[in-house]
Image (cartoon, rainbow, N blue to C red; front, side):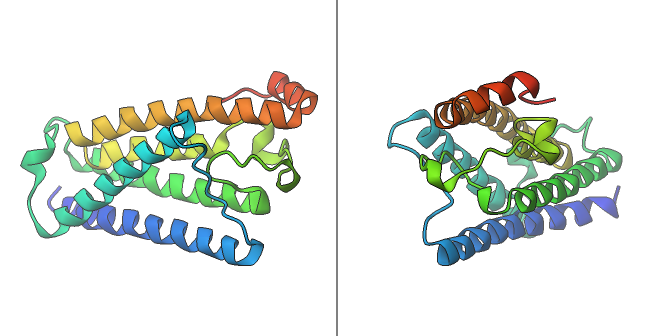
Length: 202
């Protein structure tokens, strides 16, 4: 425990910092090449708009907490679950985070220029992906993100990470429904056939 705990503590801060940098770099690179934003917030006050802002707030809190934990002992403020805070649980959490990171990168690479964050209303910029991982689940990228959220809870088992997990899963499942509604309007019968043949999650 004494050797694993500091490693996980440092790794969490660096992990979420790198995710933020990677997401920003990818989004900026795509914008510079293709001249439109791949990040879509939706209409102000709409469900997707709220989902995006809630997700961003929690992401900022997670990054801040994980970075501060490297330099200061704030665990007493996070409500640690002592019965879970043991090295095998922390290690499984980090492995799930790494698996989530790998899966998300694979899926974004598979989507290539079809990757979007949020709902892009422009049909001429979209193709309906139904092959590869999308032939098994309509939302494989969201599954990868939720796996990472569960991994974070195990890597830092606490009231804080549990709140983040519950909020994250709620936001993602609601956003998945909103995106599927938009795809149904955008692709009509093609999407309906896809929806019937492929499950939303598994």
